[in-house]
Image 1 (cartoon, rainbow, N blue to C red):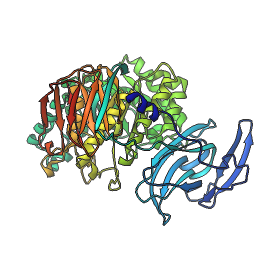
Image 2 (cartoon, helix red, strand yellow; image 1 turned 180 degrees about the vertical axis):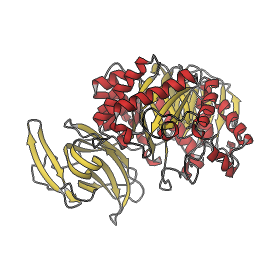
Image 3 (cartoon, rainbow, N blue to C red; image 1 turned 90 degrees about the vertical axis):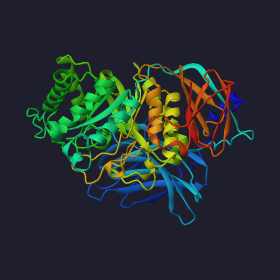
Image 4 (tube, rainbow, N blue to C red; image 1 turned 30 degrees about the horizontal axis):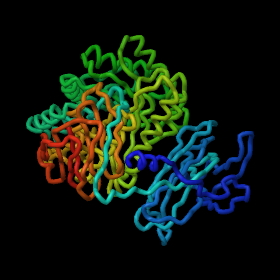
Amino acid sequence: MLALMLGLLCLGADANLLENTTWAEDFAGWNRAGAPLEVIRETDEDGVYLVLRTPMDVEPSWRHVSQSLPSSPGERFEFQVEARGIDYKEGRGPLASVQFFNDENQRVGYSDAYGFVPTMEWRSLTARGEAPEGATQVRAAMMLHGRGEVQFRSPALRQLPDTAPLPESSEVAVRVRDEVSVDSLIGFGAEDDGWFYNEQNAQHGVDEEGIAIREGRIRYMNPDWIRMFFWYRDWNPSLDGETYTWDSDNMQSHYRTLDLYQELGARVTIAGVEWTYTEQWKDPESLARAIGDLLEHLIVTKGYTCIQDWTLSNEPNLFFHNGEEGSFERFIEIHMLVAEEIERRGLDVNIVGSDDGDGLDWFQACVHHENYHALTGLYASHTYFNPPDLPFVRDFFEDRLALLRAHPPERPFVMAEFGFTDDRTAHPSTNPLMEEYPYALLTMSAYMDGLNAGVAGFSIWCMQEVYYPGASAPMNFGLWHFADRNWEIRPVFHAVSTLARLTSAGDTAYRTESSAPEHFKAAATDDVLFWVNLSDQPLEVALEGFSGTQLRVMTAKDMDSDRETGQISTLEDPTRFQVPAQSFGYLR
């Protein structure tokens, strides 16, 4: 039964729902929006394609060509199209979008896929979405965001299988296969940017008691992987590549943060952030020398051997996508120069590839660049999923892992920043969803999907609420609140701490199958089976391929403690156990 259900889920999507996809009948069935917009059908040796073009002096906007069809809530769609951004400015270039509208023609949901890298190479864009309540039509849109020229070809909208219902017996079959999904975990942790101990946070309530609470929780979690920002203004505010402020207040706070992770033996990835400091990109040689000086100061002079990875720029696809100062070519050039600095100084530091912010096109361009790919030690991506997109989380991982597997030598892939957002979220510092219990279930679900797909590490955004330099409010993303709410934990703390505590760097993960994978998910290492029940009803799990007797169960009522919580029981039959509705935990 399990094999049959899994087979049905893998059959793939239906035939293309779009009509006139080569525009042989002029533009019958297609709508155009966002004047001024020139839409032209062109043909070359590779076939037919569509050109979307605006004058370079128009206001940047969302201009598109689209086709709509009837849809009902719960239906799922995948829109794929090949695109290339020939010449565009002040925008994201070519986009593919799945959008949902109600009877009043109001948009009630959407999912976009971006193409950031100006190139003559065709690249595939894929957007997936599920029709929300109130949806009566689905729209597949090819967009030009910004101004200039982009091109599209081979658009295809396909309907994906609906959610499979739970069996009437409420029994779920789970099998841990003798097949490795991750041969060596990098580990689980969080973004901890090192400003907690600075004067700004002290002025807002950080005291020795708060420090003790923070450090006690982190020691309890025992994370294996931490990501940390280093803002140029903290250590090289003049951007001259020569004058360093190693003793600034923020750097002193960084050192104290690194002291803790050095003690714990955690792996630390340092990441550059600009925040208006972009002039250094114009002088790659000076910048590479300065980065070399930073790495040498931290690792050699200060002795932070916990620092194992370096990232040039957080989410570079948001910045290095057009213009001489921040082009993709400049991004590659800087990496080549920094790699030379790392080698010249004899430093043992991995270069993190891509680090894109939800930019598969950027990720693909990095993997395809032979010289760049050769110098990377691992690849990373970031994204914030909307809860309705939970069925497509694993697709996000597998899209990237497939690219890496096709371009040996294969590199480990990690989620260097991730989370969930809803319509209450206001970036960069407000996310009420993270304070609520479902966030723990969503995070566990992403972990399960990631481990089974082959993701080697997760760094959630972020460790705790903290004031970023110059901010007027704390970053409202974190595993616990700030001093003004007495450092209260959030339920997601237990999702993150469970994986962080019970796995170690180097562990092996094994592919784990569920007969109801959208309701109950599980993932296994050598000695722990992690699980989450997303459904609204209790489930009985029939387990195969794993042996454990100690079952830990956590629900919404178990979220008060900042140490291990929930109910633990000893199984009489290690092949069967029961779990409550909307719960998570582990078996060992």
